[in-house]
Image: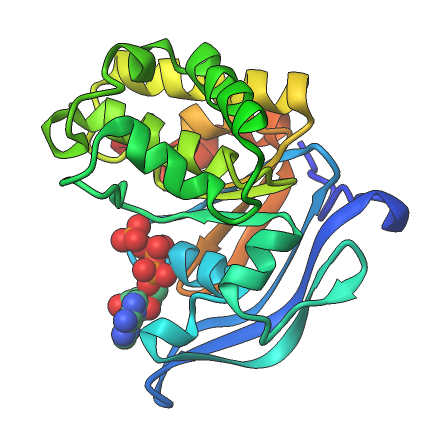
Length: 258
Ligand SMILES: Nc1ncnc2c1ncn2[C@@H]1O[C@H](COP(=O)(O)OP(=O)(O)OP(=O)(O)O)[C@@H](O)[C@H]1O
């Protein structure tokens, strides 16, 4: 079967447009070389690859968090909604609708679940009634968080912390969520639950996701398109349903994560 090299998102439907980026750590370590990708409005796109392939680095280059890791985007451009955003600070990008959920579910462990969620609302500072409505909305998506609203986040399970990290991000009212390795270290049933919620959020709220994952089989089952990174380069890209059927991919990429 021949794959189309890319199923391009029509220019006027492009929410995110990354073109030819090169990212270097500490001025010396080339982590990402010439990566281009697009995410359409309301699309779920998977960014796949093994450990160290460059997935997190690409997400950080988009979200403005690369600089915090002493990484520099030396070439290429990143456009969001048609505007160049390279070099824009992460908090400003969040205001514009891009939120990055970092790998490892960085919740504030000494704050309650609800206090963590409220930290996501800080950006837009909604009036009290609106804030209550937004919190209820999150609790409707993640009923487990409602049950644990007064529990210290550090005392909740890994799955609940991942849901909390996503819920907090949603309170910034994003149009694009950069989600780094949501399945990491979680039981398969919890991972399935999280992916089901991601798909519903996408369909019902129109939130787009760029999903960095090592678990290719799972991601291909939920995304519309995917890019495989290998040593900081795009080795393969295409429609998720086509990629999922490739036997050679099972061998090369899907491995034990399948
Ligand atoms: N802070 C850093 N300083 C120097 N090199 C880094 C840093 N972070 C990542 N790298 C290097 O950049 C390359 C890409 O790493 P990156 O974390 O983006 O990969 P990844 O695909 O997200 O992997 P993982 O799934 O393990 O997070 C690797 O060679 C890694 O060692």
